[in-house]
Length: 387
Image (cartoon, rainbow, N blue to C red):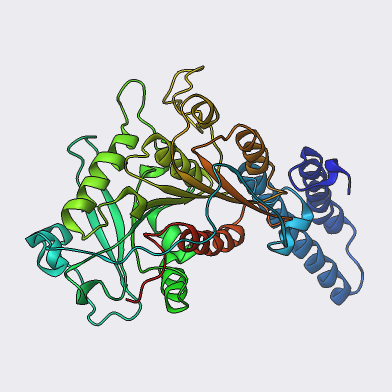
């Protein structure tokens, strides 16, 4: 099909608007002055006109939203997630299997030992035993950033039963617009971790999902040039500090990873690459590698601080990155092409591309499942150990 007929083309919008206007003209002008002599025929004509108008209105709304959010760039992408069509690793080779590290154990602090008695968790409806783990909503203060925000914390099934055990950590980021619940309800990392753990493919891990887009402001997880927003500081100092203080978290950077989709995918790769002392790996689904603001720009034009293609060439960090997207997701695919071409050791980038699927939750859910398997296969601190 020609490009001008694809769902993101302006021509499609013009065609639908023209059809809708013609239908409304037929409904409101022509039919009232040309009523069929038989009543049931007249009612039938009016009913058809109304239904067609509703259908075209819904189609118009979908096309407008789709063009704003780039969910589907081709009609074929609406058919679901396509087959895997490309897989490669560039930069530093990432081992496909490593001997797992034993569970990290030690003596927890009073705050870490039992979250049920930790005031940082507030009032919660605790479940014990929790065979599926449990989500908790907490408030994370921002002494370093000045930003206090809610966050979701998921504790794996064995967490309450092993106060001596310290767990690997995944910090998750939604896209924009989005919320902390979008990650939990759309991608179900809890179910994936529990399932993969039961299959011997991934170790039980803590998941923390902070709100990095307050009121859907496009922060890109960066620190603004003028200091008005310090979201990078919030994540790397306040959120990480809160986790280390209140949870039994693995003390090794290899036991910390970031995950995210779309704008959250950029957050994931950016925070891992800029803070290799904290994070050892990243899972980026349909994201990009250069900060791109929707709304007020938080950095000056020409500022390359958050351009990961520059960082990958000038000061490549020792981290393992994983990227997943659909080829018909033009934004993500082109961003990957630019970044993939400049990755060099000690950075490692493993990529999986599917043929179709667009910029959609279905792609991200499939990507997270595949990415978590990769995590368990390549990162010893996430490799399976019996819970």
